[in-house]
Length: 144
Image (cartoon, rainbow, N blue to C red; front, top):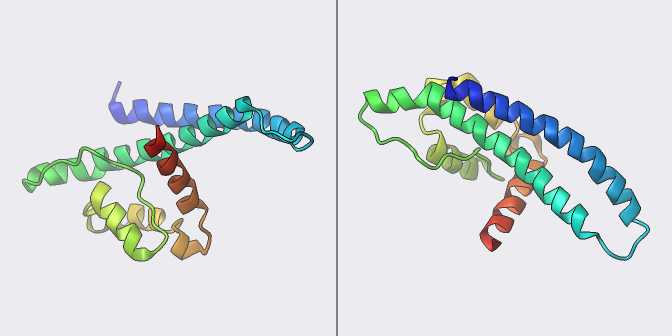
């Protein structure tokens, strides 16, 4: 099976899994509102839910790299990128730095994809959800 198709299947499975987990999280959360403590199971479920969604974003970035950038980099003699993450940034400069690290040259090779990724960035939509989501997960991963 082609690795891009396999990752697409993984992304779809992660999103389906997250949808199912969200219902459980909502039920647990409503129950926790009447308690003075947050159950460990709820904390774990939220952590896993967020990590699964972040993995889906990173898989998509790998697919973009493999389909749009890898052969270009090989043809032009540039080194391949090994650490690929979904690019995000609170500011335009932060975003450009992130996309330059993970998906360099995407803007010139595939402007539509670049624009689609940029369109959900905090500085474009005036909403920090993506930045906060990724930052929380990065912070948790450095604690482990």
